[in-house]
Length: 68
Image (spheres, rainbow, N blue to C red):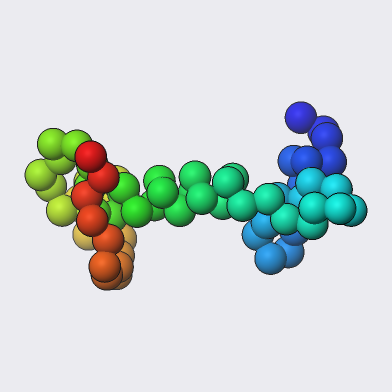
């Protein structure tokens, strides 16, 4: 939707208004999704379950735990 709160600033934050310059839950959802793509979730057993297993991606990550 074309509304002010759907604007992403250059630093990646979601703009809210002059009083609240950044909004972090939107960023948290993206980071959670990427962490699940790397470390896995639920009963996933494949390494890097969110990325193609055809050699086209080189993914490096550390310190993440599977999300249950």
